[in-house]
Image (cartoon, rainbow, N blue to C red; front, side):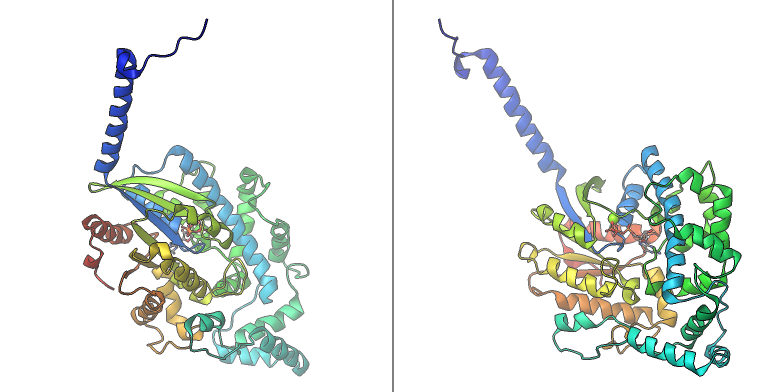
Length: 441
Ligand SMILES: Nc1nc2c(ncn2[C@@H]2O[C@H](COP(=O)(O)OP(=O)(O)OP(=O)(O)O)[C@@H](O)[C@H]2O)c(=O)[nH]1
Ligand SMILES: [Mg+2]
């Protein structure tokens, strides 16, 4: 006795029917996908450039908003942001040598007068330390990539206010020795190595803890330290969370859309989202931008119709989180070069968001980009000219200008109205399949 062999499909009506049904379902699925006209969009850029914020905006503009689970994640994230911010500031006080209670002189003259009260010996010591700290290799190379290795570092060497702070720090001491109530409070927070790990968030949001954070935040030395946030790693949402600290720390806190947009969660891995925009189905990939995350990107490169590349242009005076040395915009240029000139993307047009234009605008008022990018010759406080300089620098990176275009936009990703307008223009152009329809800034 042997097993009954199954009859060929064409002789078995039931099997044939099943087979036909499967074929039909596959072809319907194929048709559905083709009809859906799915477009694949990669959102790329260095860490903290605002990629996930753009995805949050898409959820608000084209999706159904945030789910209760997502809101709970953002509630915890923004509360942790408060703790991380205050610990970063406290640690920076010691790094920059700013004493608690430091009263920032109104101008350089007052700083010089107050400095004169210190002995010549101490002053000499500071001058030596400063020249080491700010030493600059001012050799400029003609080749762009070589020059970007050295550019992005501030050439300024004298800052009497910073000198004064160091002198007063030498006398009053830092977090460990300063004899003030605020310094004692700060000592408790400095013990938290990384507040997001193993931390009881509910306890951390107790009124006494929040009162202590507020007292530290309002200390004049901490406020001065905050004005020098470009010299250490501090999340951009610090000012926002401190401004809303009472509400964010309250027991019944539920994040608003604005809170969600300002909450900072570093992306790990690659996240797919789907949206329907006009008649187009968009599949969007949001990636982690930190250096360690970038090796995960390549497997998503195939069949990409469009790339949205974000640059935190406001970070022109900051160094990367990863090495605390490389200028963040220089890092973005190098990353942009590897994407823009990647053989797979030779003919893939790119949309470039010069993001955080709100912060950029504020910084430009007092800190021209020429301090970090010495070949900038435009007006020192002009947002338009400074932004144009960066647009040109990014466009010049494109090795295939005859095959592909770079379409720049100045963006403020936490502003829903502004982002909606920019996204509408981007998607309209993708829909038309006509990238040339873009208006240049
Ligand atoms: N002020 C201001 N803040 C912004 C803007 N865009 C993003 N942010 C804030 O910048 C922080 C970082 O933004 P994310 O969207 O998390 O950055 P990302 O590129 O996804 O970072 P990774 O996931 O680490 O790659 C968040 O706290 C945002 O709220 C902007 O245009 N202006
Ligand atoms: Mg992200």
